[in-house]
Image (cartoon, rainbow, N blue to C red; front, side):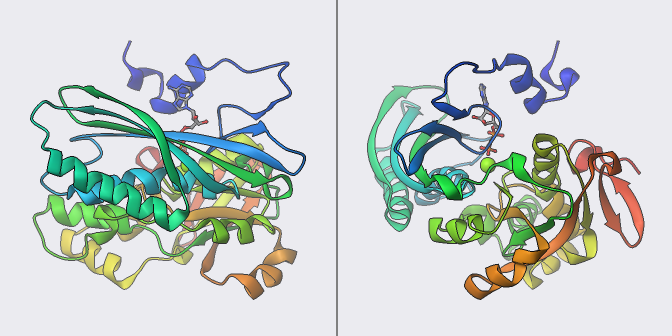
Length: 320
Ligand code: ADP
Ligand code: MG
């Protein structure tokens, strides 16, 4: 049986996972941006890992080695920031092809260190082996103030759904490259996650939080599944930059689709009780309200020009 036949990546993880029972140190196992482990009286540990495979997540033709290294760090830091945490220590495991140049790796690590320095991460270990394509895995450890821990599972009906920054830039950049067009591809080649300080501010007010690694539709679906709620996303309110709209025109695609299913924008999606909005705005303003959390029976849907479009399994599987 193929993985697609059981419903894809997440169905596979659900099938393979075992719930950890009876270990009070595991505060959250599989099912959030990071695992959460008991640590000190004030703080929990947060741990995440993300892999990048040559020709699936990057190609040597499009990405400079510096950009590959930078992306590897940013995708992982993003998951810690989405918990309200602070990233601290990284381990990197790499499989390299025999023809990989030393200079390529110097540049790749320059990218890792540039992003690591920005986020306060120290690289303290890893593993090196060979393979038929370059495979890079980073594991990242951080910590989070107990009161700030922000899970996917704490959204409540009535919460507003908010996103930081703008969405769709990553997919727009990819679409332009695929079409062989010049233009705004920097958000694809050099995605930047949010800073821990920003995630912590949001975490003081938000109920649930997740980072955008698979598109807004998919991230809100994770929140709904983990929190046992429904949600409405208002298509007209999704923040999309002028560059991304222009890219949409250039390749003849709807930029809303880039935002909903496009992937690795590494912005933060969070749910906010309406009475916290003014308090958050005094500290942080770079966010947009894109919908609201509903009772579970209302389902998860996109409201596009007054029409209800159900969101089943990411945007590709939208009914209607
Ligand atoms: P993210 O997109 O935030 O990096 P993922 O979608 O990769 O998160 O993973 C979702 C959850 O599933 C996480 O808790 C992650 O640790 C877990 N996970 C992913 N792949 C596996 C696997 N092969 N075995 C066990 N757990 C996994
Ligand atoms: Mg994530």
